[in-house]
Amino acid sequence: METIGGIFNIFKKGLAEVYDNNEIETLTLMVINEITGLSKAHIKAFPESDIAPIQAEKFSNILHRLQTGEPIQYILGHTEFYGLPFKVDPSVLIPRPETEELVEWVLTSVGNSRLANGIILDIGTGSGCIAISLKANLPGAQISAIDISTKALESAKQNADLNNVKVNFIEADILNKSEIEIPKSDIIVSNPPYVTQHDKTQMHTNVTDFEPHTALFVPENDPLLFYNAIADYALNNLTQNGLLFFEINENLGKKTVELLNDKGFKNIELRRDMSGRDRMIKGTRIFNSSDETV
Image (cartoon, rainbow, N blue to C red; front, side, top):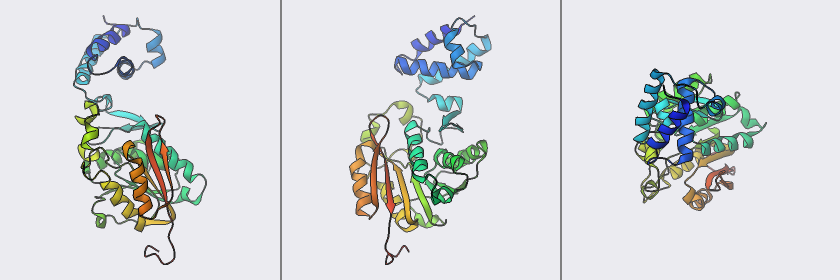
């Protein structure tokens, strides 16, 4: 009969050409926890514990899928984001820790101000992780979320139900702004596509071969395509002193700041993530009484 320690050894050998040792250990721990229901502390403390034959077969199947580069989150069908459970499938991007930092920035910027009960729009919602996490922490806010993908919105609605929050999901394309019919927002937040073809060459195949390309990639000659469109939309659809938040391509921080500055946003702040990479931008919409947006 196989043991927990034996599973670790099998996974270490089987995944050596796909992941490094630290990643393999993390993945193996996640899989054992999922299949056995044992706590991670128990798994580490008792490697001699037996694995039932039916469980060993499940481990074998998951190992085979991991060897192809398929992300563990898609294999298990779920992940965690900002302390909340989310179902994920290949129709949506897998939520990432950097995006949790974006959510945290929005929440700390709101604080106890009127924005805590304001109108928030999430553009390109995917799994719904940003909108749902904000709603869970700002129950008084009115939150809408748009996406071009019907399948992604189906996943997002399931995740809203899973977390017992109400979000208004809308199928729309930000590049065709006439499709969007909602009230002006106090906050607009977006993690839009920003990966260029050059960036693609630097990425792991478990992203490029499995996650949805429409949510990832932009033309090499127009990497700020979505930032430009969303900023234009925000100019006309943010309230006075409304906030615009972006997750960004780490290589395009200065250019994105310039884009927002050229469009008239104020108090623009570029922030790094925990890894020290330019990852987030915030801008404020301030207009005069003569502006058309009033």
